[in-house]
Amino acid sequence: MNNKIFTISVDIDGVLTDFENFVLINGKKYFGKKYNMQIVEPNGFDVNQVFGATKKQLRKFWEKYYFKYCIIQPVRIGARETIAKLKKEGNKIIIITGRMLSYEKNFMGAFMRSSVKFWLWKNGIIYDKIIFCPEHDHKAELCNDLGINIMLEDKPQNAFLISKSLPIICFDAAYNRDCKGENINRAQNWDEVYNLIKNME
Image (cartoon, rainbow, N blue to C red; front, side, top):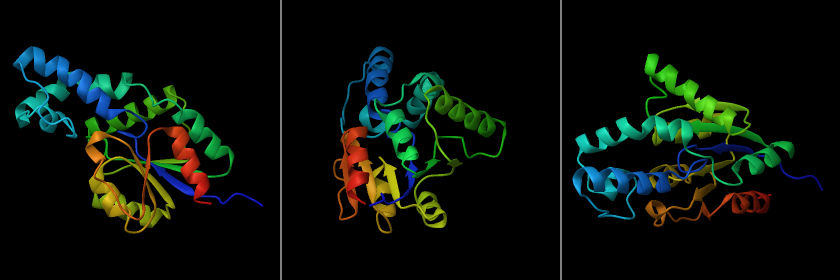
């Protein structure tokens, strides 16, 4: 019996990368040293929630760390191998990302798109197509338009919205532990992602 072939959408931040760990490690260093600020909400998403940072402090943090994150942050263990295996089995991989600035139609947008593609190439992530878009409702619309069968996501807002029309594999993080639903599956690592997809056949 042949395996079922899927069109799988993969998010980058929080799925291919460990966004949560980056925020905690670098946030502790930055806010502890500069402002003597500690973690106030360990289940928060970005540094404004985790450390109670103001909008200005949030902007200053990412001005310092954004390109380090975009270029140097490692890919999650097993992501490259799992995606390669899924591709070899005939599945289609479409990356849909709301990476900040990457969807802007200006020089910075073009630069960010190039940096994302470089990072994917450097880390050996193969894919059929990549789409840069604003978050939330845009991702849900794209999934419908592209005939996505399964979405790998970490943001609760996206997962809840997209799960109304297709199965979600939510990559586990403290900030999405309340993300539950009939169409929402949870994975701790890329081996679990693969097993969940195979069980959907």
